[in-house]
Image: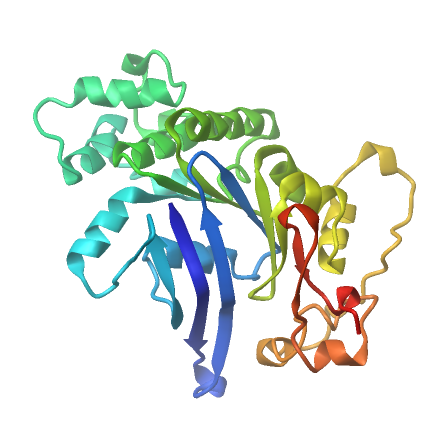
Length: 320
């Protein structure tokens, strides 16, 4: 449904570093398939949200292509962009900030309906959208303001607003991270039902690899702008090949590991300046990796493919 091919985003720096460039996303490729969830996992600053903005045409890539239903999207053609906006919808992290606090739910949901072709009295359509995201009965919520709703209810309204455009792709940028733990599972189940019943493709952006394992069909791991591992969710989480993925999994809370020490001591570089361009000259994780070799800082590792479509970019898995 939606594909990114070798997408790179470079940003010009200002101030003392004027004339230099920062690589936010480096040669990223991914595919979103109908009815399936792809999780993009990585820490803050790794390039996840930048890639999400590129996929929704909120940002223009420096190089690479975006394809919707197999057709390359032209950022220069207004018709292509308008069609893309309706078919690819973004759900933001903070539901309170993403909803206009001055308007009722009725108005918030009527805007995308009218923008994408609906007319006349939209009350029934709005109630249908609310009940589609489990806000029932819809009549109880249609005339409320966002501040009158709980965090989970506001996020469901944001999901309903995305569905109002009748999209084929949903992109959730940390869509449950600001919700109470008790209701995160309900929202993830809602996303899973939408994908299974309506055939939507979804990109689930998160730093929580544990929820990605539960929710996603496939997982891609990104570190410092570059994809380092990917494959079926169960394969990636049960047999992680890249040291960064292994560390992500070890950092996830697990009652079975209480009292155990990590088998992978991370190299502390918190007080050292980070040069993203120098990182990308080799493996971006080389400075923090407990298994780093000289070649890791000199050359980017090739892609090694394992069983079940599982791949990793790490020098540990090459024949040499």
